[in-house]
Every structure is written in C-alpha cells, then in structure tokens.
Image 1 (cartoon, one colour):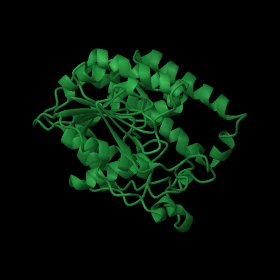
Image 2 (cartoon, helix red, strand yellow):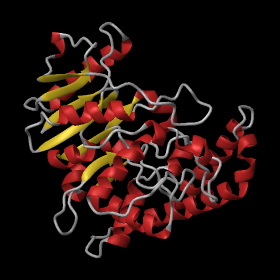
Image 3 (cartoon, helix red, strand yellow):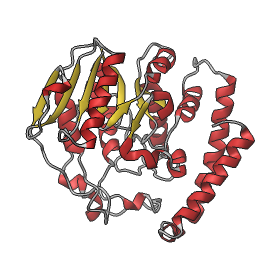
Image 4 (cartoon, helix red, strand yellow):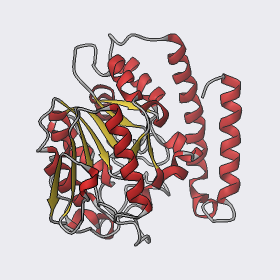
Length: 344
C-alpha cells in the first residue's frame, strides 16, 4: 500500500514540522516498503531529509467564506482539500492507500486488524475504513447525514480516489444560509451553519450520489428516505473505528476527541456495528458486541431526547459560565451508564 499525506507543509524547525518528521519515521518502521506521497502547495518547502517518494506541488485555490455563522476564524478549506487530495491520489500506483491529513499521527496499526475482520461485506464488497471523529450521527445533536470524517482513510486506492474526485464548492453553496431559510426542524446546532453542506458532508454526498444513494439537498435534510440511504451507505461502504481502534490521533482535536458531546454526536464502532446487524442479513453477530451496541443506542436516545427538549435553552447553555457545568453533568451521566452497563 501507499501512504498519502495532504496538507500545508509546516516550516522546518517548527513544532508541527517535528511532529510530522517523527510521524514519518514511525510509519517507515512499520511500512518500510510503502511509498510515501505528499500533496502540498507551491509556496511550501519540503526538506530532502523527509525522504518522501513523491511530492505534488499545487496551486492553492484559496478558501471560501466561513462555513459557520458569526465565526470568521473557521475557514472553509473544502476546495483546498479536494484539489490537494485528488491530485496526489492520482499518483498512487498500489492497490491500497492509507490517506492522512498532514497533521494526523499514526500511532499503531489497529485499523489493519479490524479491516481483516470487517473490511468486506458478506457479499465481498470492500469498505473504506474511517475514524469515528467526525463521522456524525444525523439522529443526534447535529442532524447531518452523510458526514464522513476526513482525518484518515484506508482502503482500495480506486475507492479513495473516487471519493475525492469531487467538484469544487461554489461561493453560493458556501453562503447558502445567507440567502435561504433553515428547515423548520432545525436545532440550535443546525442553525450555526452558513454553508449548504458541512465540509466533510460535501465530499461524502458527492461520493454517495455516484454510487446511487439518495442524498440530502441541504445539510440537515433528514427525511425518512435520506436516513435509510444514509444507514445503508455507512454500513456497506465504510468501516467506522474509534480512534483507539484505528490507532490515529490528531493533536488539533484532542479536546474534541475527549468531549462527552462528541462521544454521543459521532458514530462510533458500536453504532456502525448495529447498522450492519440491521442492514446486512448475513452479518455475523457477536452477542456481547451487539448488546453493548444496543445499550449505547439507549443512552444516545435519552441524550437526544434531552437535547431536543432543551433546544430553546441552548444559547444560554452554551455560555462560558454554564457550558462546563452542563458538560460535567453529561460526563457524569455517561460514566454512570457505562458503569451500570459495564462497557466503554
């Protein structure tokens, strides 16, 4: 397989550069024969000491307006991701690819163990392995179907290439909710978005559409047909692993990966497992894992119900002096439920 990195190369001597240098060294120890490729920008310098097999220098298409309202510091880099990822992936010649954001670190190869067990559907269809953060559960706080994490992906090269062959997002789509109303069912979290789709969602929606799935028209389009297709898409096309199962970390999002909110907001391995039990009649069920998945579903159902009841209070709950208290209560609830049900 090939190892593919995509992103802005940090300056030599910076802390970010040192982390990338060390990450490459660790990867070479584990995959000494795998070519390492990098897609980055024309104005970046890639030191020879990195010993990267191939570097693709690209013209930066620039960023779009912030994809969330009232948050100008949150850049919409979707077109950067598309051009950088698609162009470097075209240079891959191996059957399999491990594609990572440049700021993601591979700590161990748990994803290979899980791929050997769950990488194919019962009819032999190969999946792409992705992490749980930020693969969003559209039935929770952020109602965004087809929102697949872009941190890292492993699978057949041709599938990952197809996933990243996406058209650019237009400025009209990037500022969609400047001109359009939110759907009537929109929650506090849904109304934070300015763009028609979230960045990760924009990529996955195009990929799913190519494969024949019915996809949403806007970011929180959660009609019955959309959710059914979302569930089938997740179960058949992907294998979702928790970060500890995958063996990956992204230091930029360490705080988010420990968040009780995101613990419930994202689809984790147990959620993926349950979707396969429901959508694949031939799926071999391990009763212990299945029971743990059912218990997690119950916890999420309670949390979701509480969120929708308290939705009108969210602007107050998100205040800096109240948010930590609410987070502590949610964390205590999760710990008590985990202890009661004896699973993590």
